[in-house]
Length: 188
Ligand SMILES: Cc1cc2nc3c(=O)[nH]c(=O)nc-3n(C[C@H](O)[C@H](O)[C@H](O)COP(=O)(O)O)c2cc1C
Image (tube, rainbow, N blue to C red; front, side):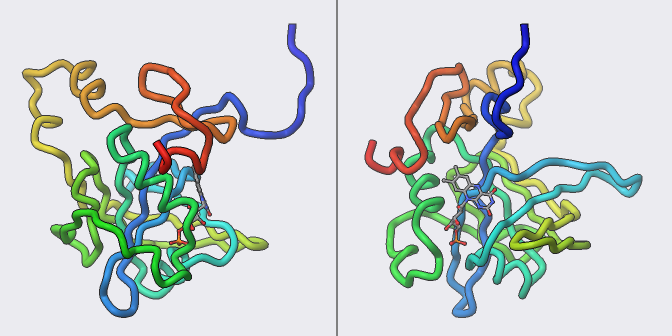
């Protein structure tokens, strides 16, 4: 039996990405995002990403028209959660230790510990209210080499990287166990 319930995306899991941009001083900034999916426009695979309200990541994407999207895994969840809670407008956000490298095709920062990274260039954007949807061309995909090893099963490869799922404002492990609520992973 089904019942009508409150409008929300509870029980509709999403994956998480760190969006990487360069600030005006050319140092990297990362924010955490889940309004993210794919489209096909005949020209190839594209990515749509939505950013609400004012935030540094949105300012930098508007300015440079490029960013990286770095898949969040269980290993990097504590720092990813921090990047989702702490505002880039606060100067000390990036005063923590993490490894980055440069994109191979675009001038974007890459979060080294993420196993799959998109280098994205905005082709169109749609503004409505406080939000903006960015439609992006994938200019490059960076993958950890073992993900490209077809002698290893797909199941083993994805179980090795363990992407995080989120729904109900809670993080879940790849095998479906509750990890913790948003804002709590940095403490673990
Ligand atoms: C789990 C999680 C998912 C998030 N997803 C989004 C999103 O899809 N869109 C958005 O605008 N903000 C999202 N946020 C909020 C941003 O991560 C937050 O505003 C952060 O400060 C952005 O980084 P910045 O301030 O350095 O730009 C999310 C936060 C969390 C904790």
